[in-house]
Length: 162
Image (cartoon, rainbow, N blue to C red; front, side, top):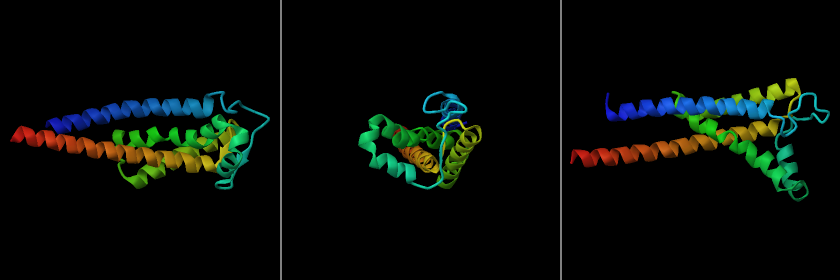
């Protein structure tokens, strides 16, 4: 087994470990955590089926709602899926942009459906958009790191052959 193949295998194993830990965190945080209105049977349960409605509301009323609420709803929903988009291609053979976007959307839809059925949290189509965007950003971070790693490997390998 070549050094590069061994490195790829080790990266994939490490990626799988981080991916499993991330999924466990995600499930706990998005479904079981009692923060952000995730208490079962909450009287304030709501849902949104209109794309960009809540994004626009949070942006329009950002000064009244405060930085924390706006950051959590808009940026937080993106950031929480960035690791998914990064670790998925690292840990699996699904390395295409289309598959990463599809699986990011699918996981987000599963979370939103669980929230809708259990009425824990709130179903929001804007969360699907923001979570999928986060997965897309994670994928681009992965490809950037992957390209840089390949470039560094090739430069090191060329020096050793000279």
